[in-house]
Image (cartoon, rainbow, N blue to C red; front, side, top):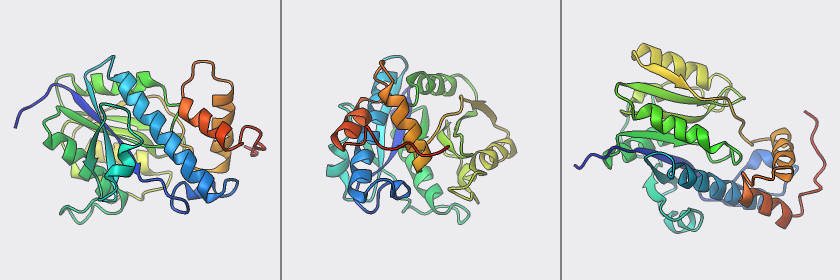
Length: 245
């Protein structure tokens, strides 16, 4: 297998579907609006990888599920973004369950393609600063073993990167809880891995964070999330009442 001197970064992509996408945003959104917004989030995340790849040796992917959704995901990706299946179906240690199986599958798939390092990235932080992705790639491409962690404000993480597919980082994790990042730090320590931390950022997964996002993109002259802003306008959400923080 040919080895590459780049870092792969994959958005954990799920085919947008009304009633199954961003359900925690309903209400205030309708299911069809949530699915439309999910498409926009995906487009902005892929675009950020493409922007970061102009500043660091990065190859972008959509780590998608379910199998058979290739055509739907391909409509969302920026040119140059590849596809890697991440449905968690391969055989894995029994302690790796739930979403951890998909994350580990994605990392395994990218490393199997010869990349020097691999990061998994969420699909619901459309205003995430591009320099964070550049910093992650550069840190992982330095000599030595380490983990790069992008902690989310809710206690999870928006990015996790590594040079080897360490299954222990995904073992016995209480997914969708506020303990995910701390548990991952402990897992890395138990493996003797240094953890390089990126600045905290936020996921958009409830009404309050949706309101925060709307305020951010409406007042952002730099265009950090253009697809998301277009979706807000298309859906008539620009005047959506702000949720109480």
